[in-house]
Image (cartoon, rainbow, N blue to C red; front, side, top):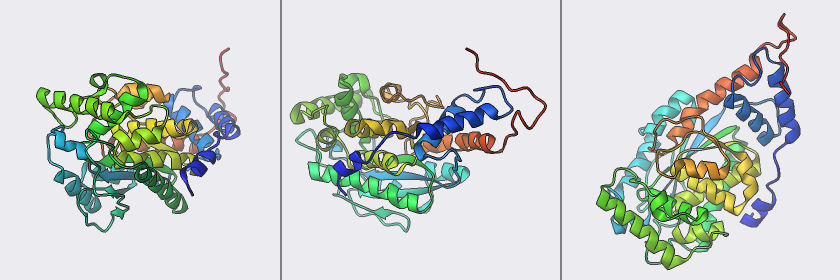
Length: 352
């Protein structure tokens, strides 16, 4: 299956299932809309899956791992070797998102989609497109064919996970230099100056931040990505991790599985997916607002409102996993709470 077929196969959410979910909430013995965004997103999940019987029992976070050639421009605090080390640690269950996922009851799936050196680990999905991208200040980060393959890798993985019974997905990543590629993508797709959407990432000095902004400006000038073409932007100034995550969002829409947007890198991937297929936005759920400068800006562009404003900017999928228990709590009330009809309480009515 090619990307055009995937895009053509993404339709609208199920309004009938959403209306039924709304009726269920209205029947529950509680003040109408008093669970706020929990009610909103349970209704949205019903529309995404086409089933008002919301089931979030099996959850997974997909962490796309890849290296970025732009690190040669001095845009990061740490060396490229950290990507491989953390990817292998994910396989051992020894990273921040792994600790959090154990509490949330979610499986962590690290994917080598472009780490600079081969990585070893029992739980790593070996899907490497190439061993890191090229330096985007000198030319395209990857070929268009490589970008499309990376996107389709994400789509195919969602199909596999659906067959395994996964009902809620979170997006995560690991890749030194990926806030640089994310800022480049966001700058192009939102038409913003690079300085407006670029932050310090994992802790750059002011001098390092200037190098990072300059690298993004150079990459955009050299490659001239087309903001109307998401795949063109990806292959010229993106990363393989972002491409894979864009595929997760497209796959969520195609296979009708809700996908949680994590932080800035994940939201840049979501923005890219929306540029490829605007209809896929309806299948995304926000988790938190990243502390990166453009974190909230990108969510607003996607029409998404996050649950958490927690000052987080770690990545890996940590913010998305943090929201999973909240959604499960909302689903528990939705499924299990008694109704007005089953009590002696008069039903509330919507105000007009």
